[in-house]
Image (cartoon, rainbow, N blue to C red):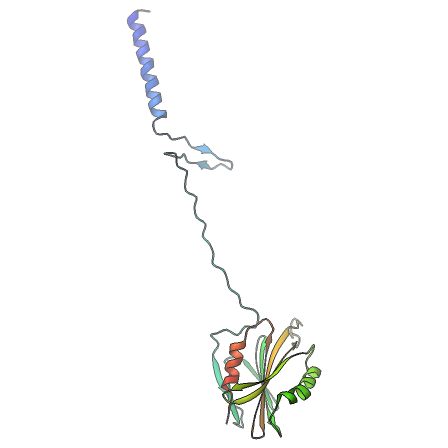
Amino acid sequence: MSRKRAAGAVAVAAAAAALVAGCSGGSGSSPPTATPGGSVSQPTTGGSSPATPTQPTSGTTESNPAGDIPDSQAYVAYAPAQGRFTLKVPEGWGRNDSGTTVAFADKLNRIEVTAGTAATAPSVQQARAEVLPALQKQVPQFAAGTVSEVARPAGTAVLLTYQGDSAPDPVTGKVLRDACERYTFFKDGRQVVITLCGPVAADNKDPWRTVTDSFRWQ
């Protein structure tokens, strides 16, 4: 081989090597690599790692205890045929009349209103001596709470609180533990007893107050 041909071969080899180096090295990139499962991970550039997508967070779902009467509940006026008193009851609840008692119910809650007469005004002592023993015989698994006098727009009422088992569900037979408030109003020989019951876990303090605050004598 002549010196010219040898020098030419060396020059060609050097040029080819330079071309390969320029294509593979200057950007700092690595070629795509296959990951398990057949997907391809893209190369990183500039030494930084790909951003991790942020997973959306779901808000906490609030649920009210069974029997809670919603704050949006509307109320309508009720008055017996005799027109001796009025009060507000939740709109849309079922109504059942039985003698001197009218009941309003919806799902797990119930309001009973009983009108009658009495020789004297009720008292805390009378409720403890007469009403509590009577309820103990009527209410399954009765447990007495407190007896007190409370002020309402219609006047002073005797309030008796207690717990007891509800009537069995006609479909499932399930029995719930109820918390009840029993108010006795009296005026001029007339007496009205308002009993409000719902599951012990429910917070119906405000709805029950709406009903008893609305009571008026006619």
